[in-house]
Amino acid sequence: MNSTVLPLFSPITFGRASEEIVLQVEAAIVDGRLAPGERLPSEREMQRQFGKGRGVIREAIKTLVQKGLLEVRKGAKGGAYVRKLDVGKVSESLALFLKQEPVAPEHLIEFRESIDRAITQLAMTRAAQEDKDELHAKARQLEALLAQDDPDLTVTGELDRELNLMLARMAGNPLLEWVMQALQMGLGSSDHALYEDPVFREKAAANWSDTAGAIARGELMQALGFIGHHYVLLRQCVRSRSQGSPETEIPFLADSSETP
Image 1 (cartoon, helix red, strand yellow):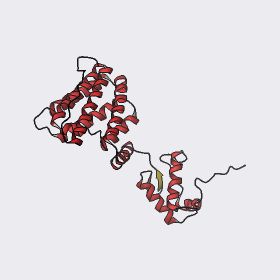
Image 2 (cartoon, helix red, strand yellow):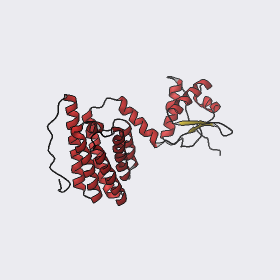
Image 3 (cartoon, helix red, strand yellow):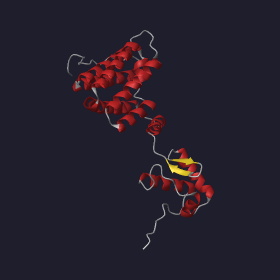
Image 4 (cartoon, one colour):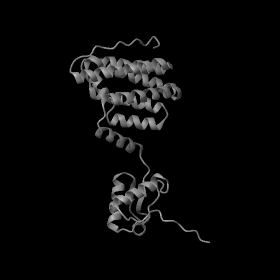
């Protein structure tokens, strides 16, 4: 007995046709009925399954291409194919969302602090010692640059971004790396405010060096203590900017030679 192959899609009976087609194709990709690299049915077959004309099908495919879910190939094996999602595109989409959605500085700082703590604990467990030493060397480079009378904030900002991404890679979890990439492309954590302010920049840079040093030495509690101090400084800096007046510094009890 011959088995019956069920159609991939259902006829459109209501709503805006092209949008409904987009939703059905997205659902087929998400639930695995359409795998990366797989070709969609021909335009004629899609017209038959959806019960709509060629123009509507092409409009939906164009939308899916713009979303990065499909690519159109030409030639003998041409057609619309499911794209494998690019990590960079995922991070860019999240970064764009962060830029467009209003996020209170405190919420962003709170989120970044929790992410940094998780990343640091994993990095100390999983990363090779040479990677930890390289992180420390780059953090000391940042400290030296920001100690200059008139530091190049573009260069130091890029180095700070590199340090954050490097630490995320050291954690060995791609989800954490993607989120960190998005944060760096989107809003960061207002770290730029620390480096733009002469009152805070050297303290923040020294703290990065202290944190990386503790990671290199395998001193987890000290590293977490320095991370906490970074966000104390950041909250002070953001608050002083919003109020237009300098803040009294909150003392930090731990230094590079004592455990918090």
